[in-house]
Picture (cartoon, rainbow, N blue to C red):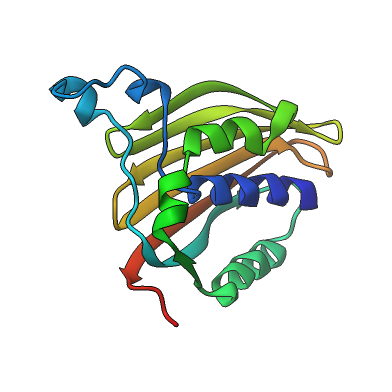
Length: 176
């Protein structure tokens, strides 16, 4: 189960890595309105507050009290703050991060990033465990809202699914 959670959290982290190049924007040219509207959105530099909420956790054989405890742990973790500099924003490339972040462990069947939207799906193999990973949501200059869904085989047998809602908001200038 720990590996399953790790893949979900890594997926969430990649979803927050920023809004960068994608196949949708590869053909964009100056003055091309259609290409410009599908171009990736760059987030603004500043302080970003990120909250991760456990939306769904289904695993056969796990008692409800364990599921409740997981929800409480995510809630207790609270929000994290991160200062993102203009230099970091300029280097962000979500599509590249997805490609490199998992190395050869993942194969992407859907990779649509552009026009303020993220819709990515694929399968990842780590330590012999296959996990389906999907990320869908909105990407804007001051806010991202991504639902990360992971599905795989539970150690207890049967299928397991977890969903995390990851919301990141620009709260203004970086704090000193």
